[in-house]
Length: 516
Image (cartoon, rainbow, N blue to C red):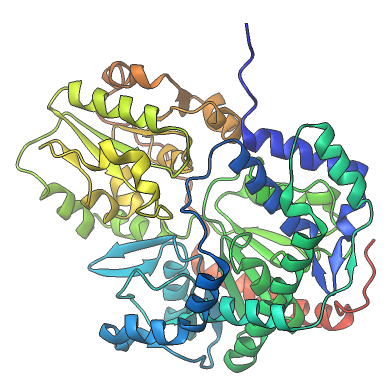
């Protein structure tokens, strides 16, 4: 019998573990840009695309990208013309700054807000602190819920500065040996060629310089970032390290010790300049895992603290006193009482259209007393939505499409009987509500072994979805809450860390430092 192929996520982790143990990749640098964190993430994308998982729209030509980049300031102004109240065309002083990832957003009461940063910013403001919010992307999701600075101008400015500026001198010991080792494993890594790495280093360094100008005007004591390893995240972390500002990653998905951005075997003595200085985790176990990176050698530069799930905080407070507007809206969705409520979490992963088509047929054949909530992934584009066309186009009294993405995830999970997905991180959040997760992709076993081992999730065949749901209790058994630390206490701890970190950066400047 042919063994199933190893999931990309698992194979990538095994490869980078081996590479970090065999080769001196921890010292890969271009100027003050630590390059191995960037190369590691790019390697995953190479492998993901080669496996057919990428469904992104083909990249525009170089001329189209140049024209679009030059037009960014005008485009931002034009798109913001109906949301001038929340348009921030330039930085202003604030006690804390936050860079979102542009996709982890919820549209609540007609306005978009940062899913993971909103509760943190609101808590800071309750303490009398001011905040400055930045979001990347093309401003396709307006209006904003609070004043927001468009960070896409930084991406464009950084790319232009990198193209016109000086070339960086790369330090890539064992680079050829790493590429040979990957080829021996049958892995093609175009992102790790010298030309691609050099371009990555230059654009990251230049974007970081752009962010430094912002930081010097905002003068924050704390900085927060969502999805630090994607988009502008590494450049923002580098800018904060250069300026001595404590940069805090807000956890946005479950780790279980298996997430590619939160799993490191080896780190340099002074940490990585392109990683945040602190990691706000959902659980104490995840904080402990980060504290053990590289046998704990870099804990002075990459600390971790258990702050709890920031998105859950405001809803827990509401439910504790028995009032929640989202519960009322859920109840008003229909006059019909449904026996079961099922959330389908879509993911923009290529090569799975047959799975989604089969699931659509399962929904059509399921009892009319079951209601299905089809929730788009926040990062999915209209181009990628073609993968789930049969589900998104369903028009049935017991199928909810648009409203499924307008509810906050906690407000939905609180009412669900089951969660169905390929391998969605929402499964960990579902477990907090006692909602069983049904995975349709074998890759979930490597990504969420803890959930499966605890019986909170399982892998099933898509053809068995309806029968498996029928065997589950109609309503989930609520798990006992482990109260998260008060958000105010977590912010106080971060404030206490900020000044020692600033002094540490001054005593160990990036330029000329040596790795251990």
